[in-house]
Length: 210
Image (tube, rainbow, N blue to C red; front, side, top):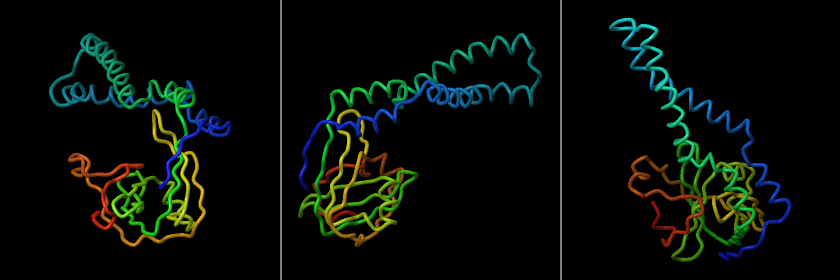
């Protein structure tokens, strides 16, 4: 595998900027989470009213105001943790300070990892006798259906600074059918740091991966 870096070209910059959130998208994300949080916080009150006794309007108002404020704080914290609040800044920083990571890969052996949740299937690509590249994503599944991926020789362009985003993939070899299908990762695998992630280069011979 050969790894190089270069600056973004105009088409890639346009592609990245198309992934920025509009004001409406921000409001939509906030609104959906806000409704969920409010409903969760109000469940105890609804249960109390249904099975114990009716709560007066004055008491409901006293309870509702703190619930609304707490909901705003929780949703804001939730969006910050998920990276949604500063997503547009991350995109611009990637364009301004980041570079395109280009991976040129030749291989003769591939294993497939069954899909975990909605992350798409994973593919272990033999790089050398002791190195294996792990790629994962629904876009790779789509390419496999068209018998383009896995491939004996291909090139991947992806972001490298603030987030991991596939920009382009080109094929120069032949379709390579995975030799083995492995089980999907479980919650325990992720919890115990036994799962692999897209773009991870493993210092493990491919035949030792289970």
